[in-house]
Amino acid sequence: MKVLVIEDTVTSAAVVCSWLINMGLNALHAHSGEAGLEMFKSERPDLVLLDIIMPGMDGFEVAHRIRQLEEDGAWTPIIFLTARADDNDLQRAIEVGGDDYLIKPVSEIVLQAKINAMRRMAQMRESLRVLTLKLETANRELQRLSAVDGLTGIANRRCFDESLLREWRRCSRSGLPLSLLVLDVDLFKSFNDCYGHQKGDECLRLVANTLEKSTQRPNDLVARYGGEEFTAILPETEPEGAVAVAEAMRASIEGLGIKHARSPVAPVVTISVGAASLIPPRGDEHGIPMLVKAADDALYRAKEAGRNRVKAARGVIRVAGAWAGFGSSPH
Ligand SMILES: [Mg+2]
Image (cartoon, rainbow, N blue to C red; front, side, top):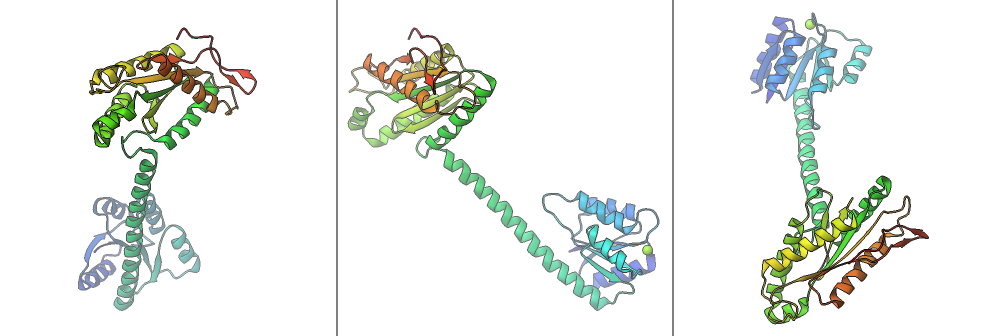
């Protein structure tokens, strides 16, 4: 344990330092407030014994600055040592960040007892700090896990719901379009029947990661909606842009070349995609399910039309009495 003694009177400092050494502690001495502060920065002691009356920077100021230097909940115990025995000084010493106050001349036994008490408090504080850090790490991990789909490692349904609400609000404030894609792996049940669930899981992981790589902007989000269904939120994206992203996704999945012998669509795994876009009306979140339904309906049409294709929602989406969409789309 390192103890920093900040004391301008050399004889009194020498006595205290010799006691500290007798206690088996590492004693450092600074003979002014300024020097003490510098030594505090370079040595980071475990405890500070601080004189109040010193030429230049006094003990109150030193204690105040030490507290400013500490970060992340660190707290170095400070015991004031002084010849002054004024109640107001004691009050001020505690106020500026001191932990205790000893009136000189101090006895070796009292000093030792105080140091032991401080050491115990410092240990408790430290274990609390370590525990808090562990708890924060665990909480962050828990938060991450609660947003991630266990099978594919991409965002899960819960994360999708939260992101869609957030992006809906953001786009409604900025007046920019919000696009949504709903994607389905074509004939996935027969893929599972043919190749088994393990291959099925592998297929979903590969599809998920490929879809995620197909988005470029930081606010785009690909999520697993459930089963073999995925979604992509594309904020600030016009209908044409959304269809382009959807088409790129469709092509990249087909391009993976995952064999699907039982698919009448193609010899490989493919996806169908439904797209919908609108400019969310300000202060109205009732349209969110309608946007999802519009993309879902478009997905249904993509499947009806033979799968492995992209369809966009036709016409405009009616949100709580306001027309919130775009003109009819060619898809
Ligand atoms: Mg002094």
